[in-house]
Each structure stands twice: as structure tokens, then as C-alpha cells.
Length: 181
Image (cartoon, rainbow, N blue to C red; front, side, top):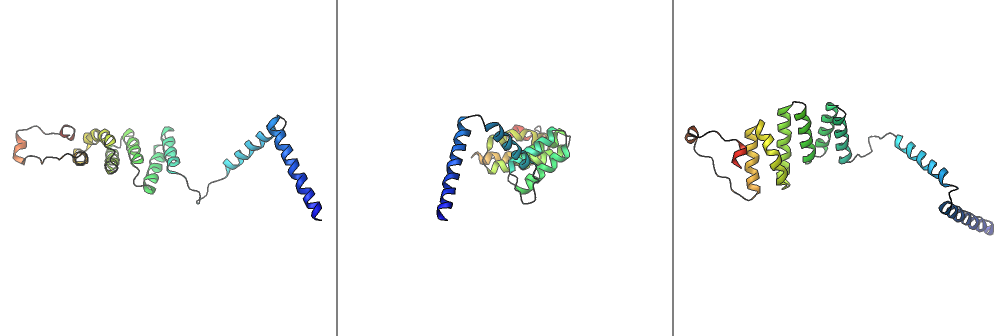
């Protein structure tokens, strides 16, 4: 009995080796194999994702971007908020959410999203990106911009001078956060 099993194993292995060599060196099986692989990939792609499937942050951000690109701003806002809820330190999601709000005329929400993104970027010491957000924040909410500008200067190692006494403002024109830094 042992010899029958050994014979079967040897012949099966030899047949597999011959088939692999024929596949690699000829075009006999390639079209059929490629068709089988593509049909398997199609079936796997149609398998629904359940609640146990983890979707990466990049995929979620891409879904939000695609929703906005297709004109579905509500889906984009929902997707960005989902990313932010699951990854509260993601400054990119906050900034892109601000862009969606800004482009749809929701300026207060956009300013808040930019402000939140700027605070996170300050924590990460990505100062060049903060500097890019500061003008848009200052345009719509100077108080938020002043706070970010102060933290920006502190992060750069500089000191921020205290504002002059309130009676000195009568003679000077008001300043915005854009002119202070």
C-alpha cells in the first residue's frame, strides 16, 4: 500500500512540474489561466464588506474626495466627519472638510475646520502648512487667527509682545492677524 501512495505522490508532483514548465514556456494555458484569474478577481471584488472589514484612513479620505468630485457635498461632509471621528488628529481631513464647507458657502464651519487643522498642525510642528491657513482664518475670524498667530510665533521660538494698552488703539488703525506676524 505504501508503494501505491508513494507512486501516486511522485507522479502527481512530476505532472505538476511538467504543467508549470509548459505554462511558463508556452502560451497553451496562459489565456485560460488569465481568464480564470480575472474572473476570480471580479468575484472577490463583488464580495460585500461587512462591519468587520477595516477600511484604511486613506481609502476613507479618497471616498470623501470622490463624493465631493461627483458633486455630493453631503456625502463628502459625512465621510470627512467619519474620518475625523475615528482619527481626531488627522489635520488633512479637517482642512479638506474646510475646503468643502468653503466651496459650498458655509464659511463659519470652514473657518472652524481650518482653525482645528491649524491647531493640529502646530502640534505636529508643520509650520509652513499653518502659515498657509492663517490668512483664510484671519479673513473670517480674526480672533481665531490671533490665537493661531500667537501659537505660531511661539512655535517658531519667537516671543509675542503684549498688545499696547487699550487707550493707545484710539490713535492707531486696527490691525488684523495678517499684519501682526
